[in-house]
Amino acid sequence: MSKTATLVINGEKYDFPVVEGTENEIAIDIKTLRTSTGGVTTLDPGYKNTGSCESAITFLNGEKGILRYRGYAIEELAEKADFLEVAYLLIFGELPDAEELAKFHSDIKEHSHVDEDVKKILDGFPKSAHPMGVLSSLTSALIAFNPSSVNVDSPEEMYLAIVRMMGKFPVLTAWAHRKRAGLPLDYGDNTLGYVDNFLKMMFKKPDGEYNSNPILVEALDKLLILHADHEQNCSTSTVRIVGSSHAGLFASLSAGISALWGPLHGGANQAVIEMLEAIKEDGGDTKKYMAKAKDKSDPFRLMGFGHRVYKNFDPRARIIKASADDVLQDLGIDDPVLDIAKGLEREALEDSYFVNRKLYPNVDFYSGIIYRAMGIPVEMFTAMFALGRLPGWIAQWREMRLRKEPIGRPRQIYIGETHRPFKDIEYR
Image (cartoon, rainbow, N blue to C red; front, side, top):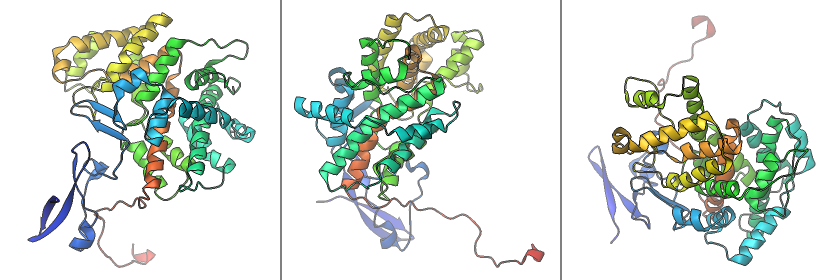
């Protein structure tokens, strides 16, 4: 027998079906609310209590600290899979076998070339342009070089659009960095792995060789996996709602990049480093800032600790902490900012105030540390986040289009003026 929920409005009762997900999530299906009640809607600013879709991609339980991609625990994927395997899993629903993975990587490399005219667009940006603005613009510009719309009912066309994006996006990300750094553009080396090739495109100097570092490659590979998808967050919801108008993949991704750029979304790891820099400039006294963080009357906020979704712990932080330790040990960097970070981490894990409130270091704390240690400038941190989130955005766009979801059209509660007569200008 199906379950229902009853809503009573002005004495009238209305029944709505109750939907249950495979992980026992309960939702009230209100898609007939307006028609059955004569125009009543719900009000939910920020959509914190509204399910915008049904999705089979990512399961997240913030209270229990659970994150799974297509049913696989994030801990197991980070330990046993590489980024391209996870990307394939997210997009197509299953882990690839050896042949499928080899073809996926080969096809990505084949379609990684970026048209020379894109360089002319890049040349139009000043060096001071923020990499996220450059990345969003260049991603949108790809539409001009791939003007035909994707037939979502054609597996071949859909696959081609996916490998094109997976191939070109790392190039554009690296170019955004090199433009700002004043370095000549690098096209990479297709004999390298996906992540290793990206690091080469980022860091190879025109007068030197690129030396691959397996510890850095592994650390970045894990970071990209941990950022690959995170359910219906702001940027992912943006990709889906833009795509619901039947906008193409490139346009939808460009919109997602812009949403991620906001400091309340993708800029958290940048905020961590900026906080650490401020503490260093003030003398580097970590105990002083821990006390400020505990003082409710003090406006200071400790960035990179706790999480809005994860109420217990961030499962991604446990995974990446080991990589952060490995990177710092391997590079042997003498950096007072990173020393301050280690001091804050140590004190927070031992301080009862933070332990009792479960304010543990989160993934943004450790990712900021790793990026800084690798020599990635702080303004590139959000672009690195976008590179990791790319397969998740693609998977969500693909799912939304294949499910033939209707165009997104939220409602509102109007609170403006009621009807009033027009006044001629001399009477205003």
